[in-house]
Amino acid sequence: MVSLIKTGILVLILQLMNIGVSAMENEKLDTATFGAGCFWCVEAVFDELKGVKSVQSGYMGGHKENPTYRQVCDGTTGHAEVAQIVFDPKVISFEELLEVFWQTHDPTTLNRQGNDVGSQYRSAIFYHNTEQQRKAEYYKENLDKSGAWSKPIVTEIAPVSTFYIAEDYHQDYYKYNSSQGYCQYVIAPKMEKFRKAFADKLK
Image (tube, rainbow, N blue to C red; front, top):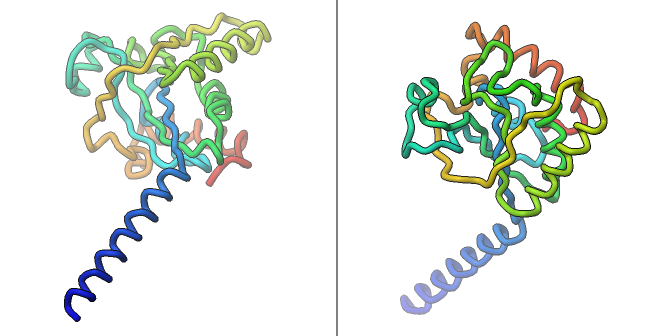
């Protein structure tokens, strides 16, 4: 009797494990990595989009292993502040993420977004596959031709490299520090414009 109960429990566990695996396979999430100035801003924007499962602030595109925030800010590591976005392509496409990316920062200012100056604030798309590369380059080329900006787009388009997650206090920074000065004067106005422009895409 005991062995039958154990067998039944084992079968149930295996069934639940299979359900979990099937759910993950069906979800088929994808990843995008963008640099668009201070990662507090970028994270706050993309975290509000339907279909985005998670956003992490971090560093990419440099030459030093395990860089700290202070080292990145010194401009000596070559890293950009980035947001790594895990999303469900059945809900929101990479093209739609690119649309939000282009419209929520100035891609024509080299190594600068507003008063944030330095190579760590550069506009960058780190592609995870050739399809993302193709779409990013196509979008960039056509935006340049369209004259959407009066100056050429300087966004870096480069293959993804090691992603270093930023320190814990940087994660969900705007969510937990919205009354802080930088959040009030820089992030809040950007979020207001973003929410109006992409109201149909918000969670």
